[in-house]
Each structure stands twice: as structure tokens, then as C-alpha cells.
Image (cartoon, rainbow, N blue to C red):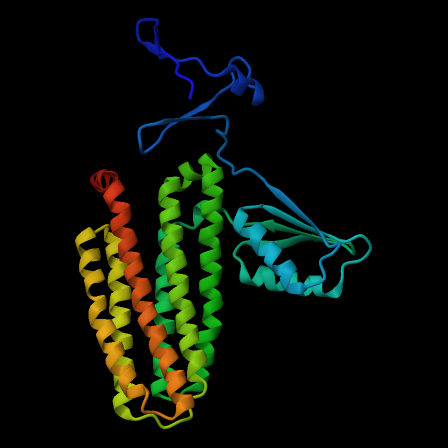
Length: 344
């Protein structure tokens, strides 16, 4: 770290010189504007990125050696999450047939990605979404609503023996993935672009906080899908009412913990978060009691129901993780959160 002394000039101005190497590297000249931003920890950020428009980043993929559709799809998702605004797919001679299928799946599974140019050897995708128009809080709320409904419907499908409803739950998991990838993309863009951070009114630390919560909700959604996946073999079977009742009761308790975790998150309330963490014991006890009933079923059914109970338990445990993250964040940033509430 270089130490530079503050100088006092003109009777009212405090001045500090900037490192010559930094000036030369960024080709800054006399009278060029620089952005100065106060960070939450009191440090100053000095940047040349003062334009309001986000930086345009281009990623090109050469199809030489890429023969697996799943690999190409993963590359596209990686470029999307990394924050590239333009993605170009290029072939030496002619695009293989699978490429257009992968691109179509990719544009359906992501938000804001569209094909803007296409030829026999190239496909160009452009991000048409203004990231500042999708606040993190709105996305998290939307994910919560979808995942809660998925979990509720997965249990209803078992109790009501409704295979159609079970299939619909699995389909909705794609919606959760799309929203989680959007949060991941916005987080990466904010970490590399202070301008976007200012436009969205969110610090990089807060963006990472939202990303962690988004990831946990996405995992709870995965367990809702696993519930219906394991329910396939038991939906047509006659399961005794007591076992089904206990499964439904455990599900309701897990969802209560999930909802309280989201409330503590948006309320920035450490005490609510702590009470919610302590409530996991009741769910664990109920799951253990229910498993003692599950093992009485025929072996294939007992295994499937055991996996269902494990997913219910894990959903509650992941919800507790949200409350733990609330406390971890507020221990460091509670004062800053209080200032924001006062300004509102």
C-alpha cells in the first residue's frame, strides 16, 4: 500500500496525488473526469467508469472440438452468468444441427437473451434486458412464491394421488433456475461494474448476500422436485392415512420455517431469524417420528417415502441457513441497514 499525505490548497480544498502508474495504465489526461464514490466501510473508490451504460462484453465460442450439446449449453450458461452482453457461436464451415437446438433451449431458459444475427457459420446472441430493471428483492420474492407453491403441490400430489400435478411441479423448477441464474449474472456484473452498482442502489456485498439467499432457495426448489420424483412410485399405492398425515404435517412445518426465514430476511430482523433457527428442532423430531411409520411400508415404498421425508427435512434445514445468513450479515451491516430504514 502506498501512503500519500493529504494537502490543503486554496483555503478550502483537500488534495491527494494519484499514482503515476495507475494514471498511465488508464491513459488519463489533464481535465479527464474521474468518479469518486464513498463505500459503505468509509473507503473511497476512484474510477474511470463514470458512464451510466454498462460495459459491453463479448464472448466468442469456436465450435471446433465442441460436439456435445450439453457442453455447449453449459458454456452458454457460464457466459450468461459471467455477465457477457454478446455471445457469438462460430463454426469453421457450417453450424451443426444441434447448435440451433441448444441456442433455442438457452434463450428459453434465460432471461433477456435473444438471437440478433444468424448465418450458416455464426449465431449471435444479445442481452436485451436492462439489469437495473430487475431488482434483487423482487426476484427473491418471486423465487420464494414459486418454490413454496412447488413444495405445497408436491405433497398435495402425493396425498391426492395426482400424477398430473406432480409433473407440473417438475416443470416449474426451470422457472426457479432462470431466476437464480439472473441473480448470479447481476451479482457478477455488479462485482465488476461500479456503475451498475450505483444504478441498482446496491453494494457489491449486498449483491453477494442476495446471491447466497437465491442459491439456498434454488436448492429448496430442487428438493420439491425430488419429492415428486420419489412420489412417482407411491402415487398409485395405498399409503395409510396416518403416514400421509404425518408427511403433510412435516411439510407444513418446513414451509412455516421457510416463510419465517424470508420474513426475517426482508425485515432485517436478527431476533426473528434466531427464533426461526431454534424451531428446526420440532421439524427434526417430527421427521424422526414419521420415519418410524415409513419403515413399516413395503420396501420399495418405504425407500421412496424415506427420501421424501429427507427432502422435507432438508428444505427446513436450508430455510434455517437463510436465517443464519441474515444474522451473519446483520452482525456486520446492521448499522448501515438502520440508516437506510431511517432515510425511507
